[in-house]
Image 1: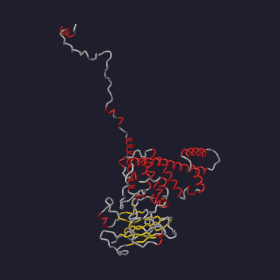
Image 2: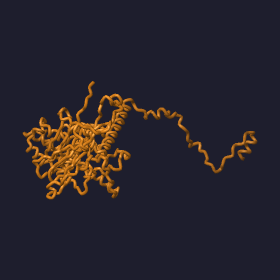
Image 3: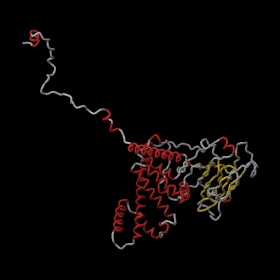
Length: 460
């Protein structure tokens, strides 16, 4: 009987008519929810909360990452502005292989800045500069997290320590006989990194053994081997840097070379951007010896209170030298610095403070002019101060608030032309106290004239 008819006879409610196309419910195969309550949202997110120790570690890591990023940014800026220290150029090299580098930190002209090899940057520094560089390298090494970057800084620290020990006569390496060092370098120099690593294991095994050996010699050999391993590591990383830069240059394609603004400050590593002589037809000295002297001076960098100085001026009209028809005249290269600082006189003390300092003023100059190919090397180049419009020493024609200037003319023999710069005309400090010492020397083809101006103290 139809279920609906049977329900009507029994006085019950007619059942709901089932859709014949719907799936039938199987009581033996039922799907039901678990009666056990699931974890609360608080319990689900409990794993996302950090302990105090973990939070502290994360904070320190984030802070170190921020400090490292800011250090790299500052290094980039100093390199672009031509006032880079050695540590800045070493950090600038890593930009091409640094995987964590932000592309927004790059500048359009960065790729045009020539790279210096890391070893060449360290070579030629003084003991004080090496000590400062070693401290800066340690700071980068501590903050760096990338494995390849850490290898780079570790290798540089080893090489820096090696150069420092050779200069310092009180260290062990400073007392080692040069012939022994030369023999060791002859042995290790031609070997590859893998060969050096195999030799390192052999030397360590020999030192651990009970053999009757010259321990001092083998320890010295092991020390130099670690230095050569660092050199091989640096060479490999530097090759990767050069390859990456070459790829970017190739991808960019040929571009028109921008005109250099004669008033701008060029980068010390972009030799082609240096200011040229204002005289038409004058050629600059580009010999290999001159370039080597220039690179060595540029490797010393520029300190915080210094800037590159290239305010070259037209040389006053003079008769041609007698040697003009014998030698081809050329203009000497130079790497000059101007020292800037604040003057805390009564006016500035009243109107300024350290948070809002007064404008910087010129406090001195460091001239380094290269004359390696002088015909008469016994006659040193000289300099001369020229004051225009009949002004004498001590006189001032400048308006209130302005400073008198003069020309400093450098004169050398054949085959070099004279060269002049415009400087502030103030009284020089010839004392030798601290870093204010006056220096005027000509050694190894370099004319050095370093001086600072006297400080004026007003007394009541």
